[in-house]
Length: 315
Image (cartoon, rainbow, N blue to C red; front, side, top):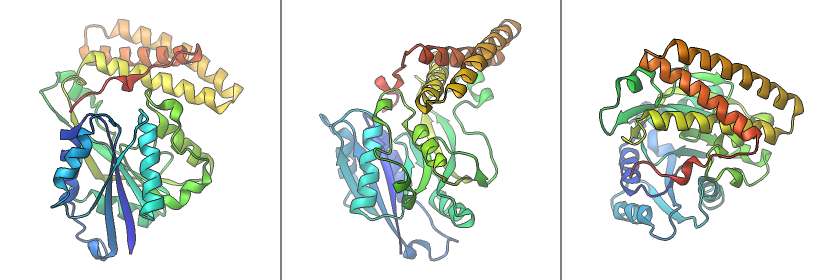
C-alpha cells in the first residue's frame, strides 16, 4: 500500500481551494496497476490566514462527503515557505507518506493527473516529478497574453529532466528529504517567492533525480488582475531578483561575477530589441520582460528584495 499526501497551501482563496478539492475528488486511477486499491490517498490543506481561516472553513464544508482523507492545518507565521514546511512535516510525520504532491490553491487537476505523475515516477525512478500547467482566464485576456503563452508551462517530453523548480505541480519522494537540512523551504523567501526553486536546487546538489510528466496537467485560473502588462513585467522583475539572490546565496564568487556580466550584456540586448520591436505589441512586451528581469537581477545584487506575495491575486 502506497500512502500519498496531496498538499495544498492556501491564503485568502477559499473559492480557489474549493475548486482544487473538487478536482481532486474527481481523480481517476484507471489503467494504473491496482488503481486506488493500492493507494491510501490523503489531502492536507494548510491555511496561512490564522486570523480569519476562510480556507479552513471551506475545507470543513467538504469533509462529510470528500472521498479521501481530508486534513487541515493552520499556519500562523506568514509566508508560503512556512506552510510548505508544515505540510511536509504532516505528510512525513503524521501520515507516514511515501510521496508528497504539491498543488496550488488556484489550480484544478486533470482527471488522470495523479495517475500520470505516479506512472512517470515508476518508469524513471525519479525523486521529483513535475507536471504541466495550462491556463484558464477569469476574463478574456489581451491577445498578446494568449500569443506569448506566459501563463502556461512549455511543452516538454516525458522522462528525466535537469530540474523542476516549482511546487505548482510536483511529486516528491519523501525518502529524499533527509538529504537536505531543515527547514526544507527557506523562510527568507516568505514574501518574495522562490523558496521552492531554492529547495529543489539543494536537492539537486545532493543527487536528486528529476523528471517531467506532460500529461500530469493542472489548470490554473488566471485572474484579470494578472492578465495585464504591468503584472507580467513585475513577475519578470521578481524572477530576475530571485535568480540573483540564489546566486548570492550559493556563495560562489565566480558564479556571481558571471551573472553580473551576463545581466549587463542582456540588459543592453533587451533595450535594443525593445526599440526595434516597439510597433509590435507581443514582441515589445517580450523585450520589456527581458529588460525587467535583468533589472531585477541587478537590484538584488545591490541588496534589494521584491516582495511579490505581499499582494494576493484571485479569491
